[in-house]
Image (cartoon, rainbow, N blue to C red; front, side):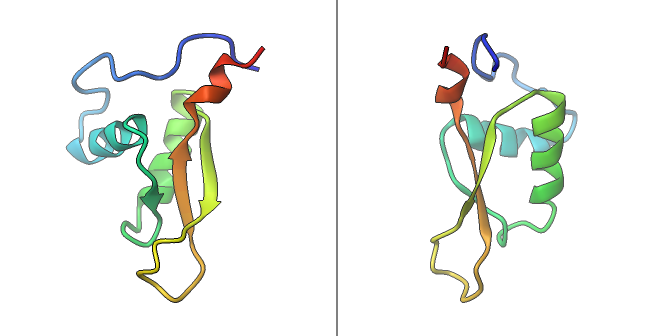
Length: 83
């Protein structure tokens, strides 16, 4: 259990690349990120989970843009406040 503050974007840039910063900002704003829209998304999500200890949930995506079943990622900030 993690007792602390949620991962709020306190700095303008956490990573040197704009690509990773955009993914970080989208997760903090509460967006669902589709895994088919970006091929490298899985790697960045893994890095965010390990480096920043973010509780990112993997869900079944329901975007209806693709016929295949695929995943979506969502940052669950509320679990950091559980006691």
